[in-house]
Image (cartoon, rainbow, N blue to C red; front, side, top):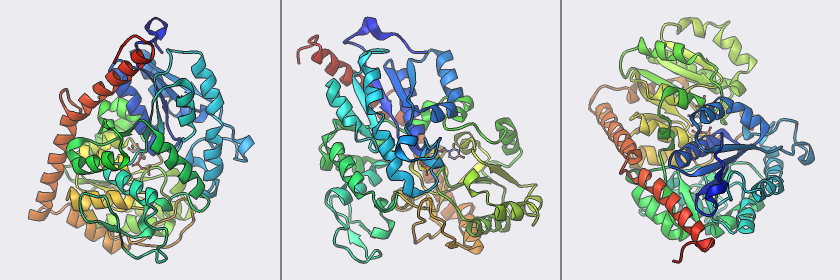
Amino acid sequence: MATNGDSDHGAKAHFVLVPLMAQGHTIPMLDIARLLAGSGAAVTFVTTPLNFARIKSLADSVAKSRLPIHFLPLRFPCAECGLPDGSENIDVLPSRYCLASFLHACTMLREPLANHLRRNFPAPPTCIISDTGHPWTGDVAREFGIPRLTFLGFGAFASLVRYVLYRFKIFENVADENEPVSVPFLPHRFEMTKAKSPGNFGGPGMEKFREVALAEERRADGIVVNTFDDLEASYIDAYGQITEKKIWTLGPLSLCNRDVGETVARGSASNVDVSHCLRWLDSKKHGSVVYVSFGSLARTMPGQLIQVGLGLEASERPFVWVIKAGDRFAEVEEWLKAEGFEERVKDRGLIINGWAPQVAILSHPAVGGFMTHCGWNSTLEGVVAGLPMITWPHFAEQFLNEKLIVESLKIGVPVGVQQMTHWGVDDTQVFIKKDVVETALSKLMDEGKEGEERRRRAREHGEKAKRAMEEGGSSYENTKLLIQEIQAKNMHANGKLTM
Ligand code: UDP
């Protein structure tokens, strides 16, 4: 599976990737692993037994293709941190109040990881790319005298806004959660409210952690961002200036998967027969289907979920609707089956219960629109597919991504969410009614001038996204440069290069 780099000591770039164990963070890190390994570097990918089991088929295909990626599953100390057994991913935590314990458990991976790296397998480490949520990896990098690059999982616009908000404590003395406050250091005037700001994720008790993470971020040697220059140029520049760091834009990362098999293997095993799903899409008219998914973490309460379904039904359009495992409450089951929803829409609705092969679906020509929670990976996957989107942000930086989609890229129709749904909290409020869903759908799929223009812009962004990852494209070149730079630093450190 992994190359033995002993003969390359001092020369080969060996990246140690430490993702945060949440799908929206791990999936793009897996893509980074493929990208770097595919460009000649060695990679160690840190994981845990439960998370490794989820990506078993990907690990098998990596082994078969002899990509130099070494998966390193480290035991996750649930019991020591008061977490239920198996709490190895944020998506299985019983509540958001466990997040602090989860992050503490992550810090305990430090010694096992350092011990492993001391063995110099598959080669001496030369660079750590780790999630911003793992500030402890800064110490590991310093122990080995190697650079640490951070990865946050946001796009450049959201990363920039978040950085400015935290670094300059913009909301510190703001009492009214709904008062628009001006955010400085952006390329244009920008206001936002505390209520919609990214800091609301994770709930109370996270302030201290955030400070530690920010302090380590400021010591980092660079920042990796899943975006591309043509999409967010002015924000990338501003982010580099304010952080005084090199911003490595390597995306859209999902494009490093070259076929359906590879896209399906990232994340988890699908809960639908992928070929059945693609055949179903084959039977639909080009650009006619709406794909609806709210990502891996957002919980949608039964009342709200039913309104989404009724809106889809009223739209009379074909749709693929993903209802994740955590949203399958008894009330929803009852409504889907006994109350006849599934039966009524069976000719034009495909409901996926659990995990969907999202990228494969989005890139199918029958799909013409995406109703999304605006998670950054989903956003970028929608951009790659050249799709207009209905934006339905829930929490974290999703309201910022909505701004980018609607106001900057001009490819979005906002459904009109005004309030954050708190992650992991049972919030029974219905924010958006069926009629509003229906109106947004008809606007999105509208065949008039406005809809056509939106589709045209979306297609253009999609083409630029692909160019960024092709030979000569900005992200393609950045990947090569990153490996070269790490390799040069390594040779310098080993006295093989005088700079
Ligand atoms: N995803 C998927 N199938 C699903 C749900 C999500 O493949 O049923 C993938 C999706 O393609 C994306 C990631 O999971 O790559 C979700 O990340 P995102 O940043 O969009 O949202 P989050 O889940 O972090 O809120």
